[in-house]
Amino acid sequence: MGNLNSMRGEKMKKRFLQNEGFSLVELIIVIAIMAILAGALAPALIKYIKKSRLQVYLDTASELQKAVVNMAIEANEAGYAVRAVTYSGSTDDGSGTGTIICKDNAGNFVDMPAADKAKYFKQMFTSLGMGSITLYNQGVPLQIALSENGGAVASDPDTGVQSVIMLSDDKGNLRAKLTFSVTDNEWVVEESY
Image 1 (cartoon, rainbow, N blue to C red):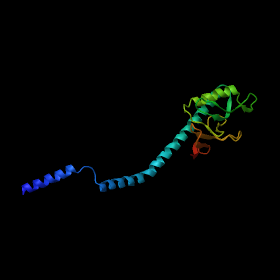
Image 2 (image 1 turned 120 degrees about the vertical axis):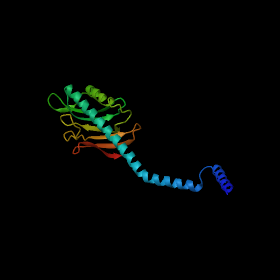
Image 3 (image 1 turned 180 degrees about the horizontal axis):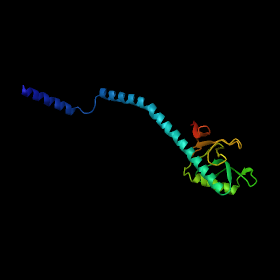
Image 4 (image 1 turned 90 degrees about the vertical axis):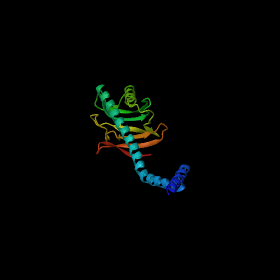
């Protein structure tokens, strides 16, 4: 009897060693389990990716806001009372055109002289180090308005400037439109593409 059990054990051992890989049924079961898990996790992953992309847009808007406020502070130290800023250009080298509305000696709001304006625009955008993000799409410029004290970004009813940032990629494709909510005092992704 002991010899018979020994023979059975050897046969099972031999069959086990010869059997390499998984059977078709086992593979189908594993694939089905993976499909169920992927189906359950995909919506959460897609939501996470979208949320992180929107956060990048909001972070960019926040950096732009800080850059404009810093630029306004520097301009104020140079004798300009900056009221609002509009800009259309690229962050690559700070080049571009726009308006920096400030008070002149008579107390009127006028556009800053071109030489000073170019200096402040260049400082504002080269400090961001943002690579080739373009801040306009088909002529629609980035528009940031400052409150009269230069400390906050807000819509400016006197100048008609609304706080809107159009973010495009380096090929000029529009990626997001951000607006500044005065009531919530924060940037909001109005549209993303």
